[in-house]
Image 1: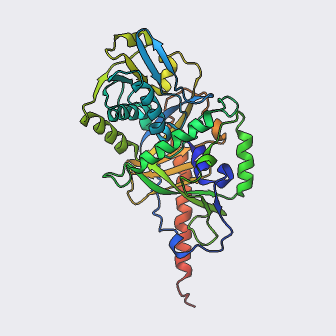
Image 2: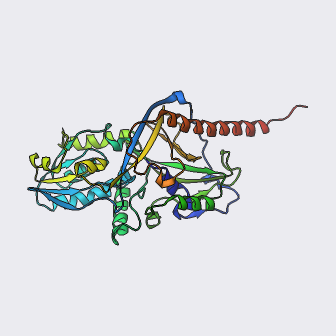
Image 3: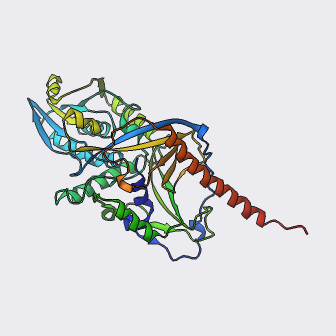
Length: 401
C-alpha cells in the first residue's frame, strides 16, 4: 500500500517510463471510457486499516541460517513490494529450501510471502505445513493497497549489494509472469485497471519536489522492467473528465486482496497443505517443529521474532468505502490515492513527505479523523468532476432567448 509507487507506475516524472505525449487528441481506440464517480461520503467508510510495511535498507532478507538442527530460509523485508514480488522472491526461497534435500518443509507466516512460498514448495513436490499466529484476513499483508508496486521502498540505493538490482529484476519478472496466469479467473483476483495522476503542477516540478522529499535515497528499478507495463500517457485538454490542468494515464495490475488471498489459501489446502495456528517468540522455539527445513516469511513480525533491528516500519492507513463495481480505476489527486477494488474503494492519504511518509512509525492505531479528511478530498474531486460533466452537457443544449 504505497502512494509513491502508485506515482511511480503512473507518473513519468518519477519513473522515466516511456511517455506518449505531444498529442492534440486521442485516437478513437485510445479514448477514455465513461468513468463512474466514487460516492465519496464519510458515512460510507466501513472500516479503517493500518499496515506496517517491513522495510530493510539492504533489501529483503533471503539468506539461509542454521537454528539448532533446523535450516531456515529467510524471505521477509520487502517494504511496500510484498505482494508484487511475492512469487519471484518465494521462488528463490523455495529453491533454497528444496536444495536441503527434505520433502517435508514448514513455512512460518501466512501472508503474501508465506502463502506463495508454500504453494511453490508444493509444486516442487514438498509436503508443507504453514505455522502462523494469523491467517488472512488478519495478516498485515491483507491490508495492502493492492497495486503492482515492485520497487516500493524495496531498499536504499547506497545500502544494497552490487548484484541486488539484477536479483530484484529476476524476482520482479518471475512474479509478473505468474500473475498473468491469474488474469480472467473467477472473482478477478488479479486484473488490469487504468490509473490517473491529476495535478495543476507540471510533471517536471513534481519530479523535482519528490526528489527533494526523499532524504534517504530509496532505490528505483522500474526502468529495468519498462517492457512489462504500458508507458505513461499524457491526456490532452478536452479528452478527459478531470478538473485539473494536467492528467496522465497508464494501466497497471490490481490485486483484489480479499479474493486473491482466499484463492491462495484454497489452492494450498486443496493440495494437502495444513495451517497450524501458533505464535513464536524466539527462534529457539522453532526447534519444536517437526520439519527440519523452514521458510521464515514473517514480514514485519520478523523484527520481533528474529530481533532484526534492520526492519523499519513504514506506516500506511487506508479508509475503505463501500464497493462500487462500476468503479474500476485509480486516481491520484492532491496526495490522496483512490483505487476501486472488488472488496472496497481504497482511499489513502499519502501525506506530503513522499516516500518518507510513515517512515519508522510503528503505530497501528487507525486515525478516523485522517480517514475522513482523505475521503473529503476525494469528495471534492468527484464533486468537481460531476459539475464539469453537467456543464459540458448543458453547453450542448440550445439556449432559449
